[in-house]
Image (cartoon, chains in turn orange, brown):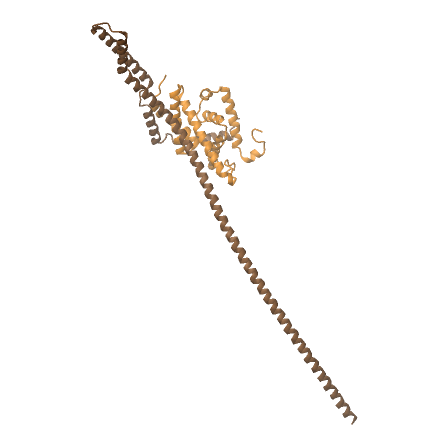
Length: 176
Length: 224
């Protein structure tokens, strides 16, 4: 069985794992937790079975944990805002272009948190980590065709979630 | 679907262009490296296997040497029981400590990995529990605060009601007194009117008499 030097692996892949976690969470403490959990989980997994693609495994684990954290955060915010009837995903366009763009990235995070977990993972691994269909299918133990289907569904759902309210009102909701 | 004005495409671009720290904080990386260092201090499995093989070969050589020495030095042919005993003793002295050490190291490594995994799960569970407890305490505090506010409002309403009743009683008694005074004044006025009417009647009678006397005097003067 091949034995990994995890200290060397940590130094080699720290940057990409950190960026993956931080981009999704935008919070240093949460990203640090996610970063450590991903490495420790990969280490524990490598003790039980051989790991062929360490980078893909680390990205998969970091993305999964970051999405879980994001979903918990969005659920919590929604729960706290429920009494006031505040919508988390604000579709109101701002007057300033920068503010609007910033809001768009935040809305993308909130929308990813609303995706089914498998779709969210496929979308993040493909678009934020540039993994190929083949790498994603191996890592998630699904076929390449299934990766394509999940990616297509995720994008359609994200477009619907990101659309302004006015545009949504003009057509039927997604999935009906 | 990859339109230039696609909102998803714009969101992905914006998301990817956001500034982020390129490396994790050094303390986070150091903590991780320390954990890995602690977890990989015992010799790796391959090395263990190699050491175990070498120890087994050494033990076999020792057994063979012991057996040969015993066979050569013995005045008589040893029995199978003696050979078995010699082998057991040799095994006990040569292999047992190494096997014990390997088993301990292996168990320690497995426990470390299990503890790392369970630590993460436990921390998540405790965080969730902490949030739940916090929400519960907040809800209880809010409920008790609501109860106190409700009680104070009830006391305020009761005091306002009492004040209103007292005001009504005072107004009622004032009205009764006013009515009594009005009745008394009416009676006085009626009496005064009767007296005035009587006085006026006497005065009219007297005026009539005076007029009659005056007319009689005037007639007598004309006759004369």
